[in-house]
Length: 128
Image: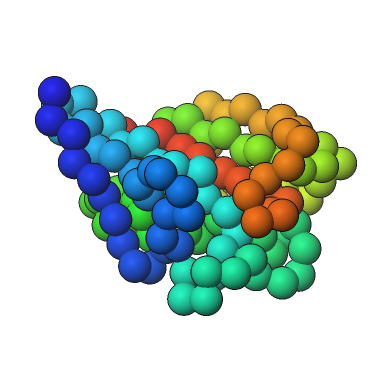
């Protein structure tokens, strides 16, 4: 199995021991690490609350997908982590705007905390 690291400076750099994404060549599967609502130039959370963070996290996912040759339609599975489950409706509305038809399989759940005090984190698997 050949694994290739996918990285772009148009999405935030890893803040831990992980890569932005790993492409598995044989099956053309792209595993995208969880993305926070970090501004990639400042490496700080965007202001404006959970909606702004969700939009930025999805934009960051899009930049990583683009670097690997995909787009949002390539995503087959996404997972949304919420610091507060009461933010589900807001995040879901923003998330839905990125998938005009045939959205991917998805799970969303609350966690006790996220890195950097983030309100939302989104990870994805894409088939390229």
